Structure formats: C-alpha cells, structure tokens
Image (tube, rainbow, N blue to C red; front, side):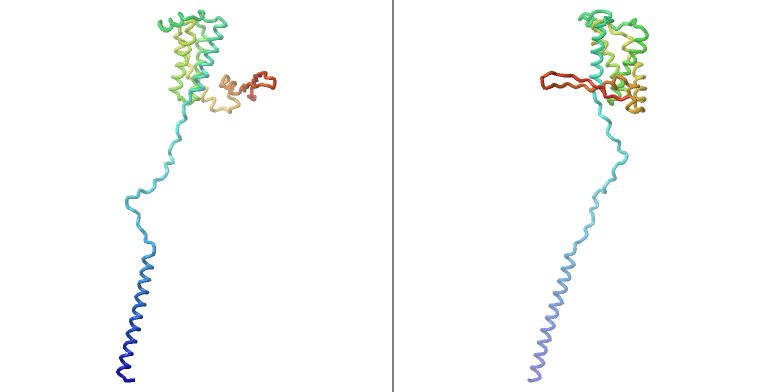
Length: 232
C-alpha cells in the first residue's frame, strides 16, 4: 500500500474515533446533567406563611347554661299546693274571690299582722328555697336574688291575692333575708357528701330520691308505685 494512502486512511480512522469519543462524552455529560435536573429542588417557604400559633392553654371552659325548668316548676308547684292547703285550712283572711284579686292590683301592699314565726323564720326559709333552686340552676348570685324576688311577687300577686292583700313584709323580707340563707346553704351543700344533702336541702333531696311509677297489670288495672330510694 502506498504510504500516502495509509496515512490518509489512518487520519480518517483517528478522526472517526475522536468524533465517536466526543459524542459519547457529550452524551454522558447530557445524561449527568439530566440526572441533576431530575433531583427535587427545595423551594423555600414563602415569606408570607404565618407560623402556627401555640394553643391557648389558659382558655376557660364555657360557663354552664342557665336552666329554667326545675326552679320554675319547683316554685310554682309548691305555691299551688301551699295555696290550696291554706284555703282548705281556712287560715287566709278571706275566701278566694275576683274582687280580692283586682284589689291587689289597684291598691298598694299593706303591712300584715302575721306572727314573727312566719315573717322572720318561715318566709325567709322559703325565700332561701327559691334562691337555692335558681343558684343550682346556674343563675349566679344576682340572677338568683332576682328569681327569688320574682317568686315572692308571683306568690303575693297571683296566688295569695285571691284571698288577701299582698304583704309588705313578705315582699321584702322573704327574698331579702332568704337569699343570704340560701347562699349559705348553697356553699354548705357543695362541701357535703351527696348522701348528707338532706341535712341542708331536705325537701329537694327527698323529691329527687322519690321514684314514682305507673304500671298496668294483665287484667288492665292501673297501679301507682311510690318508692323512696334515698339511703340513710
């Protein structure tokens, strides 16, 4: 083979080899670059993101909800029973009548001549009873005083007024002294074991432990049962 042709052929092979190597190297670099590009990139958090706030550990639980049912029904029930008992016993000034009821709203209340046992003991105790029912129903102190006063007004003007004129002493002393006795009873009751509630709140405690039921046997006879579940 002539030397010139050999050299030319060699140059062609070398050039092809070089080009092939350059192509492979370029492909490797492109692959490596694509691998780097395929890695997840960390995106910094936006500056406007608001950091999470810690929970407020000082938040107070919601206040208990006021319940009207028990204090209202309790008070009205005893007023109804009491007025019926007074009429039956004949201890009111007059027989029930519409004229007495109308007079109660057209004339001012008057001082009564009830003995101190009623005005200074029994009436304040009743005032403490209505106050305590409202206090335990989450009325608070001012609300319980208002409820006790409202109960006294209801008794004087819508029950007892059918037979006698509303009493000044009953309107003032019953809730005015009764709320202080009732507040003392409220805290004493909270400090006691439930089995000893009777000593502070005997009427309500007894009623809470009554189990009244009505049943019907196979013959159709209706039976009423009254059980006292309270344990001494």
